[in-house]
Image (cartoon, rainbow, N blue to C red; front, side):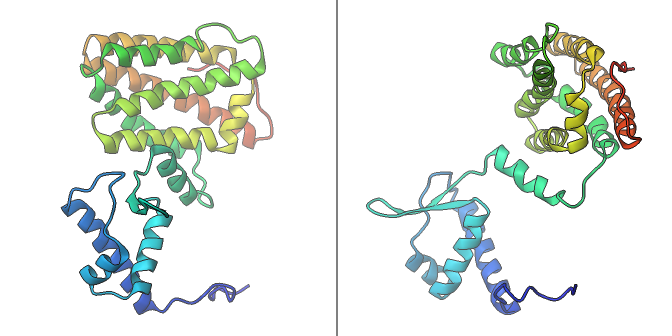
Length: 262
């Protein structure tokens, strides 16, 4: 096996590649400068060629790069053209997840970051939630406020517990913090070892998660950021210890059921 270029892929000269990337970045700058919004129409190819003094081929390659990033879409026919698209959180999560396709993090890796970020996430939303926001949080909690009757129901409850944190991330006034926390939750949903843990019955896990989340909602309703931060830190530490122990059990060739969350 060699480290050379794939002979089946077209070779793009470095200067041409840099030219395409430069134009795509300049188009992004134009979008920001002109305050374009999702759904707005970009200038036509001819206008972009004149604006950036570029050939049709260079413009089309730059637009193709933006299209592959999910930033634009093209519509043909009457009223057609090049339109801006907003990258939704699910697409952003998918793109980030691809980075870890061959760099699989451990549960300890994920929780090391969750321990730092999720308490700040909880503190950031304290005093900023509406009754509609609390209703969203409480709807997720109702999905696991009763004992599951089947393994399938228990798995759904595990996902609902993560949904609680995902809702908090959506409500976060800091979009960077919210995105990072959402991504960590996505990793937990997708990791094979986590799915194996969530598939196994753990009767005490639901009660422990519900206990922390009920306390957290009370602190959020009181607008007590310090208490929200402290409760979430306790929750993350307990979850980290539990999940790391379960991961070690799987790697050791066995998975005990009924292990309690500390």
